[in-house]
Image 1 (cartoon, rainbow, N blue to C red):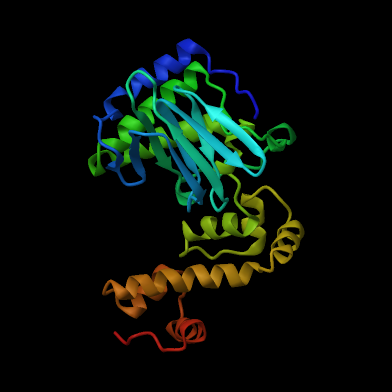
Image 2: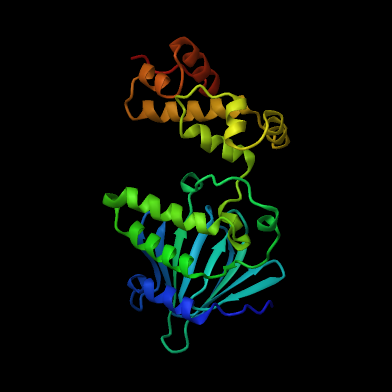
Length: 282
């Protein structure tokens, strides 16, 4: 077992205290606070085998301790630990209640890749392999984590504030090796997310490459290594959104324009090639 150096006590206490409103009573299970934000409570020691998160997770141990088993590596995360767990990786988890309160509690925030700002490639030091999922605490990081959790829990009315708070938190985590799973997207995912945010633009591979701070040849080479091409990704994203729009009652001509097609005939051919059917007529 890797012995984890306990978080700086004052910062750990400050983090737990700042999130005290998320600590519920002695009721086991999940308590949702907002989309992608929930608390988890256990009343007895439990081992969860082969847990695989669909999205990267940013969490805080609010009471008790968590043990994370990844292969032969084990890490113990005490109260006040800010931790990151990757998506699509099988992990064994042990949740251990606090001896005094008899509760294990944690606050979990799922990080949707579409909400993660593209802050550019990581530096070599940031890419360095680390087996730890515990994020070193700083005063700025503690404040950002508390503010983000509170803003997200406030509900839909604070959407702009929630987005800003989450962006602030992720910007602070971007240079932290332990937080790399939050940003570890493939080049295909980065391209898809970029074009998805502006499907009505006249995207070219050269333009996307510049936005991702690389040459067009490098972009095409890295996509090919993933079995992808720029044109395939762009068409897939456009067709997917167009289909969603039409399922919501949007007319096909309007949907075509919204995803970047000036020619309805061209759009219809692409749609038929993607889904085997013609788009519904206006």
